[in-house]
Every structure is written in C-alpha cells, then in structure tokens.
Length: 536
Image (tube, rainbow, N blue to C red; front, side, top):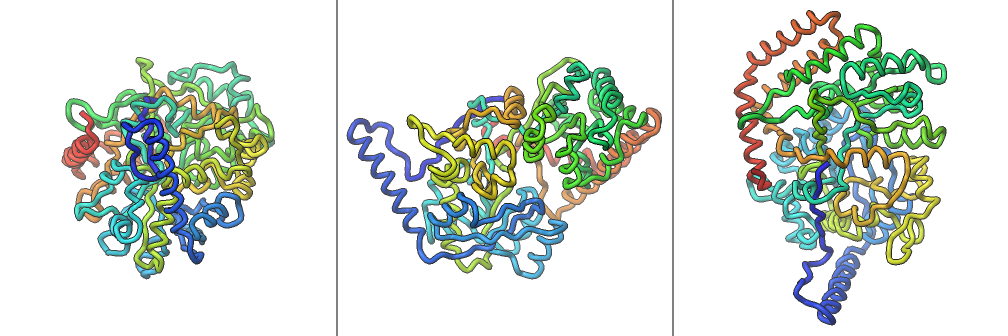
C-alpha cells in the first residue's frame, strides 16, 4: 500500500516549535499538567452510559478486564453495552421508532439511520456539547475528519473510528488494507505453492487442492471461500476481485463501469466453470458470518478473497492448534498485465461513527468520555492496555508482556476477557496514532497485514453514499439489488452462453432503471470529495 502521513493528535494544544531549551521543557510540563487537569475534571460520581453497538457479533463486556476498569477509573464512566440479538437494522429502527435510543449509538457511517437520527433531532451536535461542557474535544479530534463530517447546518453529529486521510496513506509505509487473498498454508504448500495470479493457475490450484484434500477432519473441504451475499452483491466476488485486478474507478473524467470490465468478466467466468464442475460449494451462497467463522476455525476453506481482520480470532485458534494449518496471504488474481493490486485503506470516513442521543441524561459526561477515548492517553490504553499489566516500559519503549502477546496470538476471546486491549473497544480507535506503539511481533496475523502494505491505496473519494429517502438513493438500491441477484446467477450459470445472456439482461435492465444518469450524479460526489480532500 502507499505511504501515509503520521498525524500527531495532541492532548493539549500545539506546543510552539520555536521554543527550545528550558522554555520548551516548561511548555511540555505545562501541557502535561493541563492534560492531568482535564482528566481529573472528568472524575466525579460514577455514571453508567448505555451504549448501543449496531453489530450483533460484538460481545466484549465492560467492567471485568484491565482496560475497561482503567478507563472507568480515569473517567468515572461505566458502560452498559447493548447489541442486537438478531437483525441489526430491525433493532435500530425499533429503537428510533419507539424513541428509546440509548445514550451512545455506534453504527456504520453509511447506514441510512445516521441521517434519520440527525434530521429527526434525535442526537446532539458534538460541537455544541464541546462548547458547553468540554472544549478539549477540539484538541483531540482531527480537523479533516471534523470537516468531513460537518453537516450543512455547520454541526458535527458523529465522530468516526479508524479514520485515515489521503496524506496518511501517501506518507506512511506501514498502513495496510483489510483485503487479502488467503490460502491454507499446509494445503497450498502440499500442492506445490502454485501461481494463482492467472485464471488458468487459479483453476488448476483449486482442483488440485480438492483432489489431494477432499476432507478436513472428516468434513468436506470448501475449495473457495468468500464473504456473504447480501442485497448489494458479494464484496469478495465484486469489489475485492475488481481491486485485485486493478480495475479503474474512473476513466476520462467519468465513473467507470467496473462490473462489466472484460478482465473482471473473464475471472467471473472462471469461477462459473469451477461452479459447473462442483468446486463452488452451496455453503458459499447461503452461509452467514457465524457459519463462516465456524468453518474458518475448522480450516475448511482452501482459499478466500477475504478481510483478514474478520477472521483474526479464528486464525489465532488455528495457530494455537497447528501453526501449519493457518491461512497465509499470497498473490492472488491479477490482470493480464500483472499490475499491482489497488487495495483500499480505511478512509477519512472511517468505519463506524458514534453519536450521543438526546435521551442521554449525562451529555456532559458523554462528551468528556468521548474526549478521553480520543486523547493520546485514551488511545494508548485502548491499544496497549495498562502499564504493568499488559506492557512494560523498557529503555523508554512500551513492550507488551510476552505472556500477554502469546494469549493475544492464540486466544482472542480469553485475551479480551482478561485484558481488553488491542482495540477490543474499537469504537474510537485511531489506527494512525496507534502506529507509534506498534509492536514488532511474529504472530499469525502479522504476515497477512504486512503483505498488504505495498498495495495500500486511498480510494475513499469513490465511497459514495447517496442522501437517504431520495430518488437517486432508491434507484441505486434497486440497481444494487439487481446486481446481487445477477452475480449469484452468473456464478451458478450452467454454461458460458447462459452467463452471457444473464449479463446482457442485467445491463439492459440496469440501463432501463437509469444507470447512466445515476453514474453522472454519483461522479459529482466524487468531484466534491476530491475538492474537500485537496485531491487533483
């Protein structure tokens, strides 16, 4: 991936760089004192904030591990997490409709409920809370992220986690992408570590793997794994594959139609052939994340186009059981020119945003809590944990204790229960700031992450979310639903002739829905994003 500028989010004000000697030392000491004053001011009677996390898989508790205890001790805030038991959208819509939103709400920045809550006056403007209760907010937040999330009314209603800017990516060589092509190490090596960058090599490798290893611990090998199919498609078989093939996002000042690119279609046809010959398991089309995680933990997939972070816990379980059974990142699909992959980093939008509900009885404590989490001390705690418990300072450098690192590498669940560091509480994580404490390790996740470094690219200007409840958003949703159905049908087509007919019908139906006009409107958002971020 490309390199990125390392931002310094200062705890207290900018220190004047022109000062030196005793003056600079005094300034440092004053800044430290100010930070302590800010943190001390947050401590009062302990309050509990109800925090809704719009992800059913999130199950880390608060109050028992070292990190959550430390944060409660520093802020006087205890957390009661609330997560949906089933469908996230239904749960969140129910909370909105009933007027029972909890104190804090964390959800994907792309979710339509974000605008619904803002427009319905259900959430506080964070800048208004900062002005009234804690201006420290302006010192620990990133100006570009604030600018990005500022609404037309001049207010900021949510703050992101994992926000990364184009400058970050351009000036830093250790920021990666989530997107990887993974193979099971022992099987891949047993079949000769073949070249899987061409359709011919990929197809041959999948077949050989299945022939040599038809079963894993008495259960059928799943030759190809992917993310789930949903109403927009399947990111493994559309966006990720297109990124590996370096399919452009735009050409000649217009958005490019990536879904019909000839290189991409060639690879889809290869996957169709694998399906026709029985190498695409039906599990691929019906499994949800829970089922996939179970099968990854069993090592049943041979290869996957997958977000490695989504399988890190399972990877560590495999490593603990048998280091040779883990997944490794290798070169996967490439275009005919062998071009480097274009793998997206996080963007200035980040991953999720967190908002403060107007039901919150202690908005002052909520904004102070948020500010602590965003501060350098908060980030160090979220990432490294607690000095003396999870890490020691050796020769001026923070070093994670060996036994803590070993547990992190082998049993993420137990690690979170005992320690809760390493971004177990990711809702305000600042990955760029956390680079300053990054540990040199050789765990089972490291190779996956480092493999992506040369290919990391900022593509955030193409993340287009159309305003909710508009005709454009409706048209886009219809086209995405059509693509989702079409993609499955393409992979399940019984012949190449049927594949071509399905694709041709998709293009015709999509055009009838207003695809060309929508592309023109979507490109306006790209141009606006480029202007906002200073990208030519």
